[in-house]
Image 1 (spheres, helix red, strand yellow):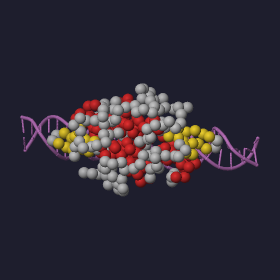
Image 2 (cartoon, chains in turn green, orange, cyan, purple):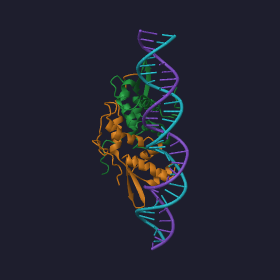
Image 3 (cartoon, chains in turn yellow, cyan, purple, blue):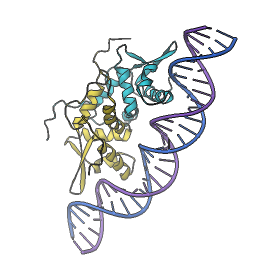
Image 4 (cartoon, protein in one colour):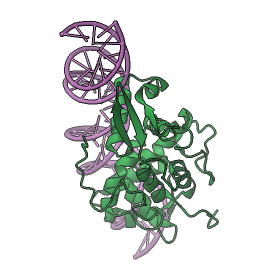
Length: 127
Length: 127
DNA sequence: TGTCAACCTAGAGGAATGTCAAAGCAAGAC
DNA sequence: GTCTTGCTTTGACATTCCTCTAGGTTGACA
């Protein structure tokens, strides 16, 4: 069922620990970039960024699609398409429970992306 | 020279302080998503992710384009195009000094993106 | 079993993106 | 002043993406 036959190499997107040093600390290798770029790309759409936020900030840790769809001026299939993009990027997980489908965030990869973007707290270097 | 006439509203991409609470803490408003999604989109390409990393991790704080181009199997104009994308997303700044053009990272927006993605350190909730 | 609701998949059309070759502009060398 | 080098811009083409309508699949309930 997993459509992603991308060779993950040494990078485990499910791991909770950061996979790589910050982007600003050492040059990101090509293989790492190929694996992580799709995750950023998935967040590169305003609708998906909001979907991701709604899912990740859910109190119960999960959200029903029936709660996501009415929050946008888009049709059901379009929302479904965006959710599929987030799923294939490894950012969320879906589970059908009875009639409804619930989405849940994967904090591991989110943590890795944040770690990759992290910068020294105090700029004070130039300017 | 700044081509971005996007209404930044209350979100200042140049600010050093995070503009918004983490994505997983509270739902990202639509206006915030519209402003920040292009930055993620710009990082959503493996070449640009590597370019961003090379620029941000430069020892002198800046990199000459002449050092960036030979690092990829792409033509000069293509690298220039990707750099323009990073520039328009507000992630880097360019400055011509003599014959060469130097690129420099903007740590402010990088810090904001990292803050938006930040998650609680200890999962320990499920799994 | 039949019917209904919720969600996903398939296919199509228009827009945006990635890449290159060719041309243009700016700065230094002779 | 003219030539050479370095980078960007322009134009073109193939690919990918976003959105929709139409149809399919799964589960609940009478």
